[in-house]
Amino acid sequence: MPSLTLDAIRKASGARLVQGPEQLELSGISTDTRSIQKGDLFLALSGPSFDGQAFAQQAVQAGARAVLLREGDTLPELPDQVALLTCANPRRALGEIGAAYRLRQDVHVLGITGSCGKTSTKQILLQLLEHSPLNVSASPASFNNDIGVPHTLLSCAPETDVLILEMGTNGKGEIANLCRLAHPTSAIVTNVGPSHLEGLDDEDGVALEKSALPASLNASGFCVLNAQCPRTARMRRLTRARVLTFGLGDEGDLVARDLVFHEGCSVFTLDGDAVRQPRQVRVPLLGHHQVQNVLAALCAGIGLGLELDVLIAGLPQVTASPGRGVQHQVAGMRLIDETYNSNPCSMRAALRVLAGMDDCQRRVLVMGDMNELGEDSEDLHQEIGADLAGAGLSQVILVGPKVQATHQAALEAGMPNNAVLYFPDLESVRAALPAQLCAGDTVLLKGSRGARLDQLVTDLLAPQGAAQLA
Image (cartoon, rainbow, N blue to C red; front, side):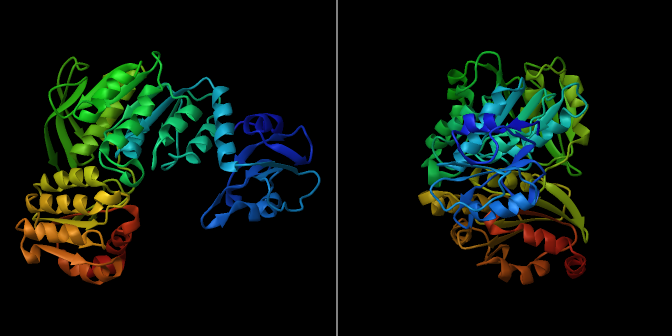
C-alpha cells in the first residue's frame, strides 16, 4: 500500500502515542506477524482464540516500526525507536484508518453483496475487465467484513480506477457500517435468500440488511439488481443511483433465455433492453446461479462505461472460483466442487445444475450441513429433503448432524432407501464414498464450510482416491 504517516493514523483512529517518534512514515498496516513488511504498523487484533497483543515484540522483530495495541492491558517493552500507540478498540481503529485512506483516493468503489454469488460475481467481473482500459483492483479471497474491507481499502494503489469490494454480514447493521467505511460509488446485489438467519432473524431481515448498500449510493453511481428476486424490488426505490437489472426471465436490461448445460458449459441466448441484437453465448460455468452472476457482472461492466461486445468477448475465458463450481475429471467421472459454502438458496441452485446435466449416466449429490440458519435450520433442511425427491437424482449422500432432517424428509417424499444414504460425520463417509461412485457419474459436492466437504474433493482427486474409483 502507499505510505501512511503515523500522524494520519493517530487522527483517524483516535489512538494515543505512548512512546516513540511523533513523526513517522509507515509502509503499510498488518494484523498478522507472518505478513509483516519492514516499516509496517502492526495492529493487534484479538478474538475468542487469539490475542494479537502477545505478538507485539515478534512483530517488531519482523520489521514493524510502530505497534497499535489495546489500551488498559499490560504493555510490552519495545525499543525506544518503535512507536507504541494504544486505543480502546483496535478492530474499530482499523476500520477508521481504512475509511480515512479511502477518502484520500479518487477511485470508483463497487460494492457487491447478496445471499450468495458475491465472490463468483466479483471474480467473473475481474476477468471480464482484465483487458479493459480500466485499472481494476479487488478484495482478495472473501475479505468482506469489518477487517477485510479496511485491509482492501488500504491496499488500493493511487492509480486504481475501480476497486471491487465484497460486503458480507452475519448481523444487523454490518453492511451499513461497511458502507460508512468504504463510501461505495456503485453496487451489485446478487439476490436475497435465507442466509445468516441466526443474526438476521428471517428473510425480511436479510433484505433489510442488504438494502443498506443500494441506499448508500448517490445519483452518480449505478446499482445492479436481480429482476427475478422479489426482495430487491424495494431496493430500486431506495437507491438514488441508476438501476441496471438482470434475470433469467423476460424482463431486465440483460436476460438469459433458452439456457442449457452442455459439455461443462452454460449456453444461452443473451437478450434484454441493453442488447441491440440477441446472440447465443457460451460460458464455461455451470448453473442458473452462475449465469445470473455472469449477467450481474455484464451489467456492472455496462455501468462502468464499457461496450457490451467487449465484455462478451471475454466470456469464453471465464473460470470458476475455488469451491464455487470448479469442475474436475477423475476416473471417468465429473466432480463439481461447490464446497465453499451453502444455504438453501445456493443449494437449490446447485440442485438445478445437477438436474440439468444431460451428458452423464448418473447424477450424484453429496450434501453437507447448511450452517447459520438459526431456529429455522431444521425446517429449511427438511424443505431441501423434499426438493431432492423431485430433482431426478440417481444417488444422494448426506453428511452431518443437520442433514439428518434432510434424510428423513427425502424418504417421506418418496425417495427409495438405497437412493439416499446418511452418514453422521465426515470420517464415516470417507471410507464409504468411493464405493458409491463409478465412471460416468456427475458428482456435485456442496455444504457449508463447517461441513468440510472440500476434504472429500481432495481425497477423490488424490492418486490413492482415484485408484479406489477406477
